[in-house]
Image (cartoon, rainbow, N blue to C red; front, side):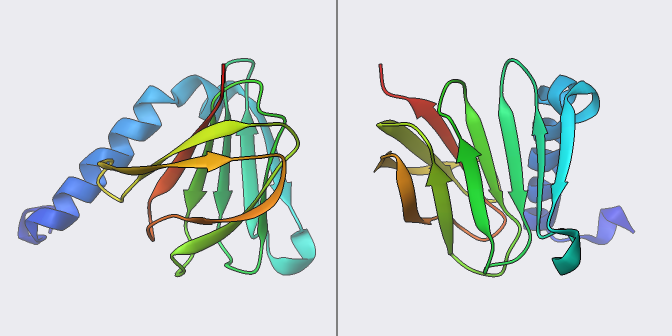
Length: 130
């Protein structure tokens, strides 16, 4: 069945498997926090001393990245190309990646709530400005 998938689907699967491998320690051994059970967990989070990963599954949810004291990955698992991102520190730089892991742009971020353009099935990697 996998052999019959279009090339783009295979590229996407390869990217997300690689992402999972690169962030294995955080995803498997970090603190895991599902948010808003009453809404069927539209946001889940994994955090370690090295990084924070936040996955958003509902376009009405706010991705709370928290304090920008380490790399933060906010994954867009919604059907929307825009996400509401809340940061408690800043300024910060966000690198935007598409579903294949290809860098598509850079955005300046600040503390507070802001709208960020993130491709569907893509993500933003947020790092503090030094």
